[in-house]
Length: 194
Image (tube, rainbow, N blue to C red; front, side, top):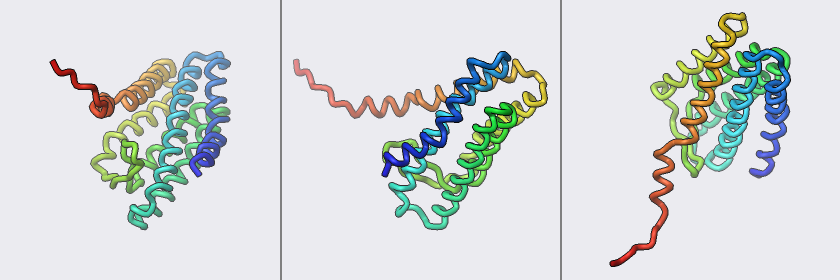
């Protein structure tokens, strides 16, 4: 089943991701290249999260409150549709596509009642508003920046900021020292007696 989910997510996201990567190297405008690259990286992350969320739903749907589960599925599916629309639109209108992608993030983070835990067990927890505030603020800042970029206000500076923000987001997310420390403590080293 997970193999089919992998293929489905790949088929949905790959053409847009590849198109964004292609634009990164073929557009003759530096600010557009940078935005395209930032959203290429973000499309890879969103494809990964879509896979993990779907996989988590299949694994733990019996453990989740039915009403929360149904709300999450609705929010999740609509998020994926808006997000994919944005990624594909960005191949024709980079600014407007990016705006739709960011709107999908605001939609998800505003209305998702549960969130996938950052563990290997693919479990969910209630996603309370106090947890959402910092993420929503970041999403709104990104949306405002992309709206300014779309209307030709500070394009180069905004594109550099968007690449930096996307890179920092991915760096922080995937180099979590706490999770690395927890994995390291699970290693059993031989005891040296002396």
